[in-house]
Image (cartoon, rainbow, N blue to C red; front, side, top):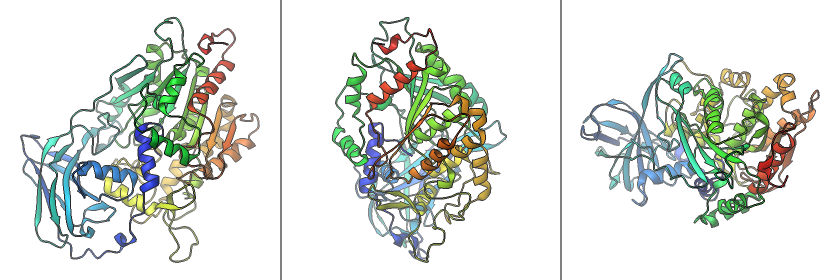
Length: 579
């Protein structure tokens, strides 16, 4: 799930919660048999002198501001369906050869292009270019190589796009609509380093060898007060686990953000205590703040904007690369203590799952985690699905005919705003074979096995919702069901986890995440020899995704105190200030 920390992520989630409406029921029942619409897109050798492979998107917007490709991408992220789009795979299209999107193309919110209402639209084409990978596991696959944009098909450098133009569209027409790709998206502009914020990017030997292609890891590093003035001081490492971003920890900024009102809206809805990035910066730079080096790790994969921080069959050895290459590089170059007690993590949503997963899978490597509203950590409650017993992800077991289908998202009042069927349709439209960089396919890439064709094998059929039980058991037996993993391995990992796990759980999380947390709490509270000795705090009713019982500045103080309290005898805690 998208964690609402950076301004971009806050904006996306607020928009999703305030504007998102389920796709019309009519989209599933429209008669598309008469649809004959055909759209052909070409490229000239002057743009790209060779064949192109990727996913071709067509956006249908009410205006050209913003560009239709951007409006469609934002609509897809928010799942509100306001700007329809359709797409199709392209394989080896030569210059001048037509890349076709016809009436049967996948789309959202309309399932097929043939179901799009006739009308005048601003249209634009964009090709999300794929890279060929000859992987160490013997599979050759085509997938999007992240260009440091965080797997966003409308913004990825090197993608080719057409001009936007206003077109009369009638799915029943025999006319062929033609577009030509004429532009190429430029490289991402990485913000310049400042006194407080540094950015690094390194090539990973481990991942490059596995993928058969240069692969990169990075980090946004937030330095403490007086870092350059104290060259002999070493600091603890604080990791905020989250999605790919170029922003620093907790949105740190020395300028009052223009999105302050938007952030306040999100904060009020979530009912939590988090402050703005500007407010956090004032505390971080203050004299009474313990001094730590705080980082956001960047580890995009060809399937999603982050790897979830663990090794997996589809993403490869990201866990190894992060712990053997990236973190050691950071610790060496930014004067960190480099001991387990001095490495602590936090994160919410996807970052919540990552922080807890890394704590459990690398229990002797970290000193503790402060985990917020994590993605499902017990797959008996994969949101609302029990993947081991339910037959279908869309249909509630034993429900009466015509009953509402299983939801994916709600408001804090419990109002449904999106179903599993709808998000599954969205993911089909964004890419075949798990290549759409959506939430479900991100989980498939991390948790699931590799299919015979080398691409992720999905937990459920995205058209029918039928669950593949073999995939479910693979996910459990390979350590991605975190409650099951903790229970099965407690005698081995428990001694290294005592006092290290804290989980914060809003009871009306927008994505039905609390139920798995309750199951994890039941297990951890039952542990003996050793007892886990951690903490669960549950938000009061009406607290949603993004909730926190304290400010980010107070969280840093808690984490710093934990590190100092667990420092070995004789270790310096000068970085704490007054201690």
